[in-house]
Image 1 (cartoon, helix red, strand yellow):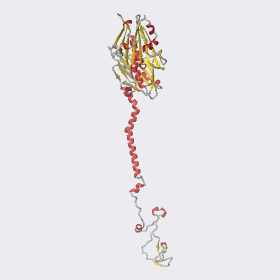
Image 2: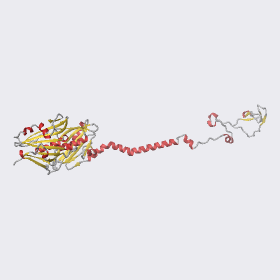
Image 3: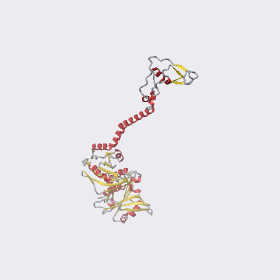
Image 4: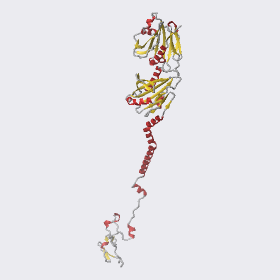
Length: 465
């Protein structure tokens, strides 16, 4: 409310305070001394009553104002404008913050849903994959023509590994060990020792291509009264890790069975018990071929009349050659082909020359000195670079025939200390004379050829008129 007013004198700008006005009808300007006559107050006029509320107790917004009438309120009070909606938002979250918050909430929601519906099931699948495969294995009971197999608990079937090792049954354990089962039906005949060995080694080399070594053990594995030979082996994989294991082999009525157990070298002792349990889950059916009898391979009979001896060579392996093409005067020449081997011509072929010797001739002594005779018969040029050495570490069961004496020796021909070929030398003697077998063997597949040559020695017999 206004507390003073200006002097009415235009030349005077003195402000006169209202408090100086009492009940007198006039007032004198203290500066220009002009007298101002006041309007008489109405009789019923009462001075405004002071506000009973102290000024200090009023709200700050009203401390500077004292209102006497509604008209004065209207003329002197400016109402505060209400903030707009935009101003209200500025005091809270901005549009950008709302957008970021909303996007974050959406991302968290989507991520959580994705993990719940996709990630969590995958995680559970990864955690339980081994247990699931174990359950599948537990449900599997394989009842085949020649055997029954119940896979061991805590082993899972590994189809990829089985395919690479050319079998239907490969299982992996928690220690990364492998239990492998393989079988092959040879139909009308039993597989030879070299064929069994070939089947075993070909699978081991597929898995462990480097530094593969093996050794036959004296103890055998017996499963349901079926005896299996045992081999221990060690080899290196492509990643330079060393693996070891055991291989058990058996044959029943022309069917070959292989059990191959492989593990990292530091894990074998941990899985031996599991392997034994897995082996006992295999049952061989001994009567799968109740009327089976081995059928001998078709063989060509070769008779050497001047010593009254003959022998037979399986036609599936050996093919006859014309002896006129050889100036060593052999009685028979044959070229052998290994059906299980791969590689170049020299690795697949073996050449067998057969000579006869009468006991009464001086040539018999020459054949008793094979080291010298081999160079002559093979047309090898003896020199300082090429030499022949006798092998003494080959352990094989000797062939024993009635009324015949058999002596067998093994040699290698070296050039610059590199083995070029292996030589099989055997002399079968009777009262009427002798047959000398000289065969050049590829070193790579010597076991196969030594088995086949033993079969030929077993067929030697005395002929009668």
